[in-house]
Image 1: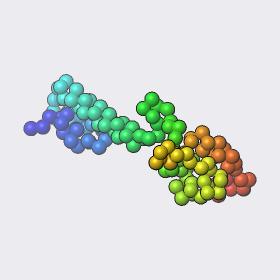
Image 2: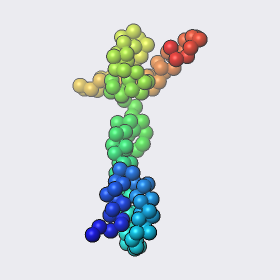
Image 3: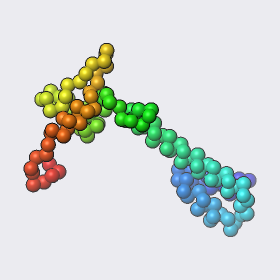
Image 4: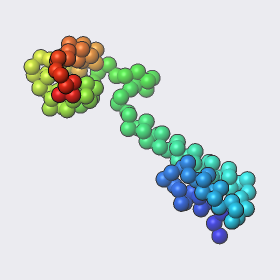
Length: 132
């Protein structure tokens, strides 16, 4: 027979916040001991930690190990940095609206500061509709 804590974990493994809710709903039908509550909270914490780790891994490349944004950006990172596709970024580089990259041996790297300056210099058009 499974404990109430294990049942709550199995039923709500995708939604950690609902584990305790399920536990309290099951409390009337079975006695929940302290060990079950500790187990539920521990599993809930592990699920949340795993989600945070996944998000942190997804953001790799957006900052260095010390938390600073990288000074040099790859083509894809530079395009993402200013919020455009790589094709549009290439077009902006070709027309001189974005800076040309630097080379570090075989790597092609854009200076984040120069990209910032060029992005600021793009300016804004005086349209009636700012979304166009």
